[in-house]
Image (cartoon, rainbow, N blue to C red; front, side):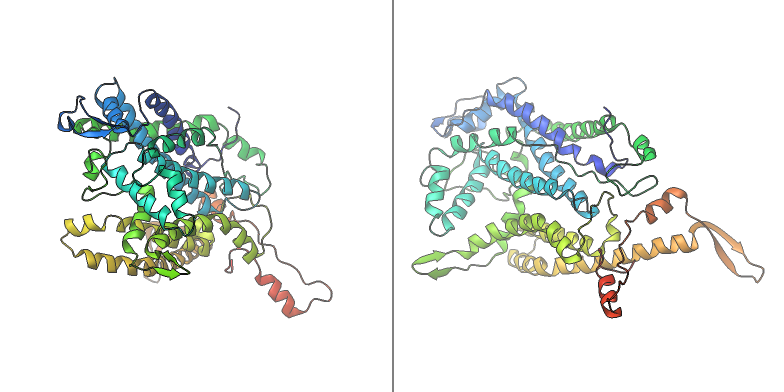
Length: 479
């Protein structure tokens, strides 16, 4: 109740995955009592008439049983499904806020690494939980997973047998995947946080706030409960739509892949959940390519799109704080969050990464886009391959120029004041707009930058050496 909480709405983004995680634990515990993690095939004789008499696994049959025969079962399934999407989406947005404000810098690198590890763990849990339903959509995703595992040299076959218990689809994959999300989720520390202070009046760069800031930012418990209501509202909107649809699965309406899994069947327009869609997009864009070496065949058209994008993103996130410190030579402790415009290079790199991810995510639906807009699928693939390389470069340049423009506007606000909209006629007949100095809060936010250390020339240091030392300052540009 006495926790000091920064007074800015963006700091509450990290609470969204926390409350989504609580909903996941509660609904997942409820579903555990009724779900049967078995691949034993049985004829379905339940309440859902369109599937009566169809042979399916006990896992999918128990999912239908939960939806139609357990009181509140369909509601719990839908809440669990959408809370999982909010959980991972909230983690991504929170990490973007931390990245763009530089809150990952010393002394918070360990918190940042914990967050990256949690994101990777959540993606893996999402994959295993996504496959438990054993419907046609999850079966297609599991087939891709098995194909990626088989494509790995030397260990691929052993890894595939370890995951699914034999040749695809195997007999044990549901039972093995069922044991993964629960202990992993129980150990998930949802409170890894990065609370550097927002620049403004009363904030200091020391580890503790000043007295005025402490009083202004008190009441973290009350503020942190606000996202819980927002999470509830988002879930409520989605649940109302799916309750009206009346489908047995929360994802039946969007995928067209309702029904039990079958190795020989696939539904049109099938895409995984958003957090794994970028891997599906990279798989669709990669041309056929394989390497034969020492009797081994390396299907690069499978290995490269499956491992390179996720490895590039996760490794880049983990290594970026240390790379930035090494490049800039900045080993100070930072306790004030930067505005994105104050570090144009970092902001531009982040937007380039988002564009790279977004292009791959969009290309996971290239078949749906081409069918809906009556475009050639081959043309869509060619466009996607070009955008993967051109898009991030354009995003970097445009973002960098925007940040410089915003810096110049801040400097103009301090030097000439802000526009008032009042037009005044001068004695010479000239019309000018009246400018007034910015208010204290705006001026404090603009001026609330961490001081850049300047090394003064000591005895024995030449002028050229002094100028070279002065150029080594964080942020890159002249401030």
